[in-house]
Image 1 (cartoon, one colour):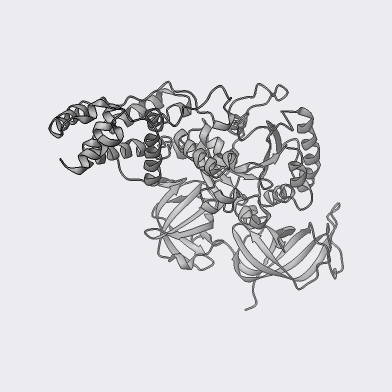
Image 2 (tube, rainbow, N blue to C red; image 1 turned 180 degrees about the vertical axis):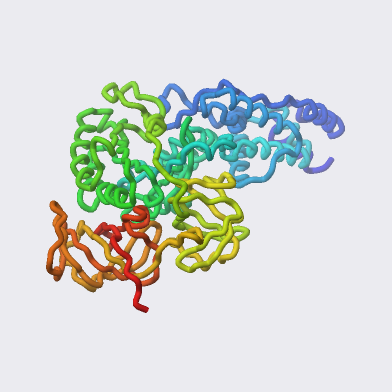
Length: 597
């Protein structure tokens, strides 16, 4: 008898009397068992997914030691996630039909990790009669099993994108989440994606397991947007995360901005693409104060969002479920009282532009459904409120203006950006400024969905012909040939000095952030001071300006940049000046000065 056949008899002997059969009878038994195995039936009425740290002691998750239960749990897909609607049931049944067909699964990412986990879970439990005989049956059956398991694991893994033939018809709204570091921006973004069905329940369970291994179990929701390994390890967003979700009337793009002060330039890039900002503040004792004091990012982000052209601001008072807060109206009002005067000073109208609401990102309270504990808040939950906002007025008749946020190579040159005005269609000829390269649009993707034409306000990926990726820089503008945008190095602007310890004189250098462009500039001349109250201009040229003063100055950029006057095109005529990691001034372009050379 072959040594491999006898090996399992020794370690499974006590448990299973049938294991001592002869090799000839064994193969017949295996054939009988495996051929008529029952197809797996999903448990549609499974319990709703509750994160493990929120479960009460009474409701415990099934023990890992029971290998079969764990295997079944891993194999159950995500019908529960969206509350089990009819459409979900339909897609669910299709998925299982596919699984029953042999060879239906394709390899995907994370295969190895999932197989190991499954193997570990099954290995700890007591094997049944069937399992013992499968093991004895040699390597072939094991391989078949592995293939079947892989298929079961991987079929439901792709992100559930809603059916989108009519997506472009919905109004596109870009929402940027801003606020101090650790206020809960990414967690709220991840929770919204889960509640609207953009992230599967199984994916979240996987994130939760991984986060638990790193002792970071409350971070798992933010991993839906923080996809970078560095961001996950440190728990801090670095780049602007992108995702999208849909409500009944609108199609939203989430821009998850970093809160850390080191990454403010990335945040400015995100805010410049947004129509609507959500300022997330933490109600937890001490955290709100840290974010709001000088040096905290709550103030700076609100001001930068206003400068970037965001007109409407929703303030989400997060972490209301914290034991130090416990949905307290007093704490909510306290945060509100401190914020309103500041937001008013920045330029938001408290009656029209700002809307406050309490929520909890971790539990999802007041994001989709109202909260029973919070009796004093009578408004709509967050997602319903977004859906009920009035439409943004955009004209598609204007000239094409698409500031480039990012670019990369992928079967050609691909650029990303938000279409500020005009409309773009496939095969259209456009001009890349300031290089004046003529390019052709090969394909158009709006939020990862291919389309033939795009309207203003949409976040686009364009594949271009006629230009190399190295010839493009973030901050370049795509225009139509009949109406090119202005480019130059010297311009006059009205500047408000927000925060600067000493005086600013001609010759002062700073970093200019205008739309998606970042360029070093020098203040070459101070033309006049402007009275804040009356708007009168001084007759004499000032020798310097200091904090809280408004002046008109001439600025010269280190390289050629694309810009428009604020009067003609507000999105490309407003800017911020930063120095030493602080925002020192905000301003608007008044006049473009032609270069002498």
